[in-house]
Length: 217
Length: 385
Image (tube, rainbow over all chains, first blue to last red; front, side):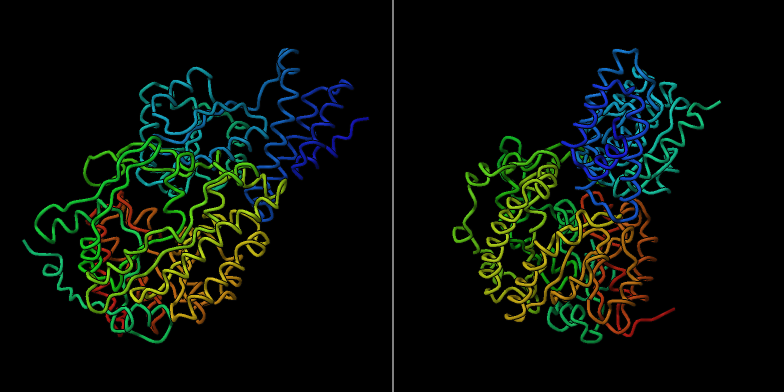
């Protein structure tokens, strides 16, 4: 029998070798990949998120866990695709906005959302607004995740909102913003749906949005 | 055209010993609350001097090199002129191996965009590479051309004496110990090494720390220097970047050594760190640090800090950059400065300034408003109406 509790703990501990060994064992013994995600990988990352919010985990610990989860996910994904694919929790387009290269926060958010079962379309850094809108359309995204470090570059989040509206996409997505200068007041001002101050909280609100339904009626 | 001084009735009388040092060492109330910022971007300085002097000023531009941001700075005489005319008691000058290593290809990536809140000029910014680094393993560590502090040029610390106005001193910014280590490694590689190769992390701290202490030893012998800022971002708004135990093992021993050296030469030490550093405040105090800067409002409550640590730490900064200085009105800037001075300045122990530095994306009129409000409301005894 495959010990998925041990796999969950290996995710929490960021023990990649051990986690990969158990994941491969699960594959070899025919455990459905979605079950591995649902019983080990996703709950493992949820616990990591809680530990980060509780101030017990810091950036290196989260990175270890997230990389471990990514490595296990990479083993499982080809099997999911081959069997016809399991529906992701949602699809999120993520980027650091134009003029800005700060991405560790954005990367952490992407990893946490991946851990929660989202498919991430990561547009990287210094991303023009129109590229975000194009990606939303191409991937039929549910969420847009925007990050910025400076008060000048965060104003480009407003440009993304304008671009989404112009392309008739605004009502099809929920927009979550974050970054050092960003706050709830700014998010409200530009018409974003949420501001969150850390990766774990961003993953929580992302799940809430998808559960309720992102598209405006 | 009136200068800023004439327009606002500000009297320039720098007094590093009797005002700034007295304030940050909590030795009672000086004549007024000093200004406390160490970083003002060149576009802001340039605009200030243009209005003061009635003409544009020359900047020095470093030649472009592949992958590196253009470096723009003022000539030393104009640099001092700015800090004097803006009303500061000191001129900040920096030294350290970061002056060499952060211009090395691979440490940073450059992007060009419009960053200034005034003017349309696009500027280049160098961003620390968070993912990739240039020292990620032992081979790269051994082959890295570590700069030799004995080959650095410290003549600026002597030359500045020609330009310092009476009463002014230099505040020397060094530090970048934790930051220096992870910048060179890239944060990803650094994070991985903390678990997979802790000896490499230890060796990095040893190399960077030793070099920085050598530089500190050299620069603190110049009689132009009046205080030292150890600048190292240990945290972001939500908390420390790494475990407190990491800082206790690798960082605080070096900080204590630096503080002891500075104190042996009569120099106060200010720690500059962004973010929420409450978990290591006791460690900072135990190192003998004299004052804390810049106290980002999103991260820490400065009133709580004053109440809890005000008997042990001077406080510098805190005027909000997330909204007030960058997106607020001059009236909002004035109101926040007035509030902070009333909350923190009675009894001394506070120098007023921004919650990080004055970057080019602070509207110029807001920088002026902060400066003028500090003069207007900072005269002792502090009025509480």
